[in-house]
Image (cartoon, rainbow, N blue to C red; front, side):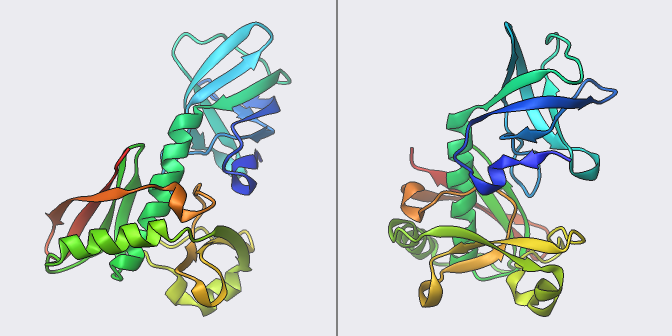
Length: 239
């Protein structure tokens, strides 16, 4: 199992680690990492692993077996051995953008309070798919409310509940077809706001900003029809 340092500190960009295994495809498994693996609609981090004078470009991190995180080296990268000490460092600018977009999508699910059928985080934009038979008529109102929530500077925190507590509170899950990973005994919740001022609370394993005003202004993008009942709503970072 790889210790996911990003889960406790989404702003951490580098760490010391040790190569514990190498997959048949050449992917590197570390004992600990700052690299977020692809999942939950958020892309895996890219960056580098450094060991001695060698620099190993990492194109993506993905989930492996039994809680392992696999770092995929670029073609032609120097070969490594199990036991090698490395310094792992992610692309900090891209991670910062993922934090902003991912948190913004949580707020979009507040402004459009409909079941979510899919989503994707990008470095400049993101989207959520909703069970939305009819297109919304108040595009400007959605964008204005979304930006007002962002500008409100709501604190973003995490907490944990047991699998049983989540089962007893199904309203916490906004996704219509995909349930958060369970079976490990506990589930991570991301809370926006606090106490009576809570804006949103839902299961999520992704990376987020510490305060919503870090997202900055956004604009509403296309609203596309995707099937009989689904509509895809895009949001773009202004900068």
